[in-house]
Length: 236
Length: 295
Ligand SMILES: Nc1ncnc2c1ncn2[C@@H]1O[C@H](COP(=O)(O)OP(=O)(O)OP(=O)(O)O)[C@@H](O)[C@H]1O
Ligand SMILES: [Mg+2]
Image (cartoon, rainbow over all chains, first blue to last red; front, side, top):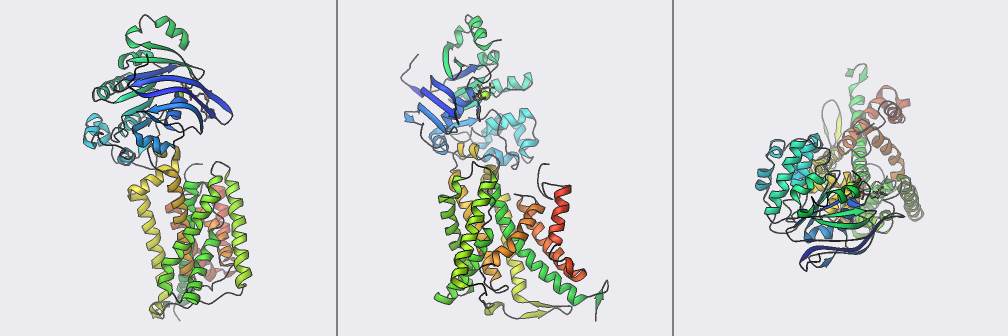
């Protein structure tokens, strides 16, 4: 499972919030162009993994390299400039900014990102609501905005933290379509999901996280054989 | 003699003008405080001392370098901002994760130290600073006499406040600032150097105090305690307007200055306390302030 061309390579990654030790040596990798999920129960450390890669956790140890560059020890603004972008679990839409301002807030960090027109092409609803206050959007629209605004930046690796959480089935489907389109455009995606039925429709591989460690890896084409094992891991 | 509601109009307009001038200073100072509180989470109690430093830079530049008022208007905010940036980098930046109280105590202590040093060096009697000759004299408006310098102060304050507001509400830089005020960690994770932004915002906020100090020099004498007299009222203004609200601090600053002036005509005994009475009422009815968000 260790491909030499991994774009993101996480090994022995540990993280703490204050005194609490949350990640106990995460090991996994994502190759360029792959869609990979982190599955796991509530509190397993999936969000903390995303934040640690992004440099948003004060204390971390181990290694997370992106395109060969070590990110542990870099400030989060430097990590973003390498070409990684986060769509956070809580969406992080800014109330004091309107939709347009939210959309163009993340600076372009590298060439090759989508143009604003292309992004609005994927999310026409956001153009209609461009002058509304960001947090006046519906939950689904806010999630669209949280994904849309990182597509312009030129980031090659997108960290999507539970983009389908709490959304109606049609919107979940729409987000699935978007993720597949992004993959076909060459984006590399690390996705956190609770809903493995959804994850199975978009991902190449799945890592199972428990107590701050990766305990298993399941390729998507073996998911149906591994269903009982996976249900055991997730307690569903 | 002309009267309005039984009050001589010259006295009424005279006091309203004084109120407007005070309001101009309240607005500039509370604007800086609001900016700093919004992004740094620090209640900058040394704001009054930094305003006083602005006035002193003007006086020192004139006395020792022969630099005139217009030079001081540029030099003072730059000097006060530079001093503020050093404070922020060496001391304030260690406190962001702690309760507001720590920032308040630190900046309060700093204010006492700064004022103590200036008092030791220059005494408390105050130094006069002449009105620049370009702005000397006044206009007789018929119903009152308007000193040109005072009109200039009101206009300058309005321009500074409006300019700052436009910068924050209408520009990309302002969007970064508003976003970082809400969620600095996420803005930084998008690739913005938030720590530098925080440092520059503190510098900008205290630069506003520095400019206000220069504007004040010809009106009030240049005195080590000029800031501590003013800052208590300014904090009341900030509380009334709503902590951290940019527009709120400006509008409230001007309104309360006028209210104070009006009170001086109608019931002079209450003039020095009217702002605090308003503060009590606002705190009871709308604790987040007139323009504040939340409960
Ligand atoms: N800011 C924080 N301070 C202290 N502990 C935290 C903090 N954030 C998360 N934790 C703890 O870290 C552990 C892992 O949390 P994390 O958010 O990474 O889990 P998760 O796998 O994303 O869960 P969920 O599926 O509920 O989103 C949990 O025990 C949580 O209580
Ligand atoms: Mg999570």
